[in-house]
Image 1 (cartoon, rainbow, N blue to C red):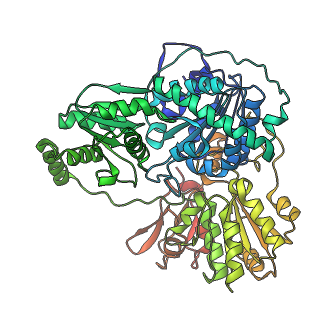
Image 2 (tube, rainbow, N blue to C red; image 1 turned 180 degrees about the vertical axis):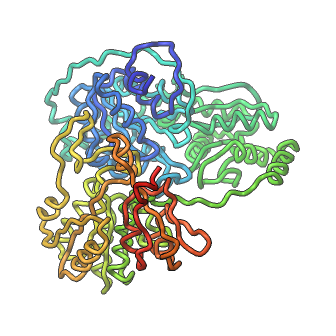
Amino acid sequence: MDIAEILTKDEPGKRHLLLGNEAIARGAIEAGLELASTYPGTPSSEIGDSLFRAVKQGKYFFEYCTNEKVAMEVAGAAAVANARSLVIMKHVGLNVASDAFMTLNYIGVRAGLVIVSADDPGCWSSQNEQDNRLYAMLGDTMMLEPADPQEAKEMTIAAFDLSEELEQPVLLRVTTRVSHTRAGVELGPIREPRNNPNFERDPFRFVTVPSVARIRHPILVEKVKQATELSEKSEWNRIYDKGRLGIITSGVSFNYVMEALEALQIKAAIFKIGMTYPLPKKKLQKFIASKEQVIVVEELKPYLENHARAFSQEESIITPILGKSQGYFSEIGELSPRKVMEGIAQALGKEIPPDFRAIDEKFSEDLVESPPRPPILCAGCPHRATFYEVATATGRKGVYPTDIGCYTLAIQPPLEMADLLLCMGSSIGTSCGLTAVLDKPIIGAIGDSTFFHSGIPGLVNAVYNQHPVKIIVVDNHTTAMTGHQPHPGTGITGMGVKGQGISIEEVARGVGIQFVKVINPLKVKESIRAIREAVSFDGPAVIISRSPCALVERARKRRENEPIIPYEVNPEVCQGCRVCIDKLGCAAAIWEGEHAAIDSDLCSGCGVCAEICPYKAIREIEINERV
């Protein structure tokens, strides 16, 4: 059964093996979802992708948006117009959406609005590991935090109901280990969408001029008080087991605590907090006061820990509260069962069980350390050719700001063409800043999806302030790094409809860029000439380097029974110059003895290595040699 059928088939009681993200998508559909919007970003991508795959069988509208702020505005407006809505993003996406998010909390909603923030402790696929529980505090927004895929589904449904009860948005915070864990999930009944959208005018609620905002802020504060009472009674804030030792935890850390206590053979009462904002103050105070010691186990910031101390101080509770402040747990990176076990043992002055030490020692003896394998650009990736061409055209004498996407991997040798990165769309803005203070070429790189996400304002700034930036838009026709989702340049919508794609070159010309050229990076000499022209142009210039993603192109060829013709090295001609390996660095190029070779299983047949080989030692495999 494919994911679309699992998500949309009304079969309560049936169990399926689902990712946490897929469970959230199912939960939204069970809740009567009417609209969902997203900008894809790992670890949240599978939620939107699952809804996209099921949209034809579902009864909701789905949209891939230009960026997270737009996605928040789309879903927020739909919820104001009485349609149950879901908006999905990764943690840093909430930074982009925060302008709309902060005011949306003031005006509230008329139907349920659930905002998914997928946090990434450990920076597995992100530029930071911020803790978005603090956004719940900042925006006075209710937050639920599941510990596993089953809870992820159930909390999604509960979040819609909670949102409607108080007419406020609800944040659903997941982390990478919940989003990407696969577990058995029991399905519930699917509610029929109400299909009763309507917009009732109320400008003195929904139009936040200062006089309205001043009225709405006290209402928001009152809503938080109501939410706090709900938190005190919430089924998601549960105490497990008994004991004089208390442990406060939430999310995936709860699972690690359970494993650690079993391994250490420690009895403790565990306060598992599922509604992480607002916290159940009275319930926490009572719990802490009844314990001899309390240990707080959580990832990243000491959010629960600091609140536990503050709540205790209010009631003069003197129970010791142990956690990150004493160094038992780190504020950096993910937790794990082992880290939690060590932290709890250290806090209690206990030894790690000898059998665990023996396992560690045996594992260390038997372990054959695998060589490091950093992420690299795929074999045949057009971005690799583009950056080789930029390096060749500029002699590596410029500064090369980069952006968020596959092309960020050009930081790796041998390309090493990434010098500065802040966030989505920043390559153009940082290029402007560098041109203002440096007298050398500044060549920024940005992807096609990222260009539409937040690159255009930077380009407008470059024209307006006359910054002579040179921008390379690496256009591979997809949002590749997060799972090949469509974007405005493709013209494919979240409903699967093919429309008119938006031309990057026309946008660049429309904002006033005088030098705009489109190149095919697989044509190396032509591309190098065009890049040199752009660098020598007196003013801002844009090069669109356009060639499809190698993975998408390989899949297309297989689908259409078009042969993939790999290349090979003629060992009699190869002089061992290693240009294909040391300059281009294609993943399919390898070294065999005294000459280069090409792994035909990896080769996509792009032909770039053949173009740059100074001895013409690389050629397509002859027809009679092909398998």
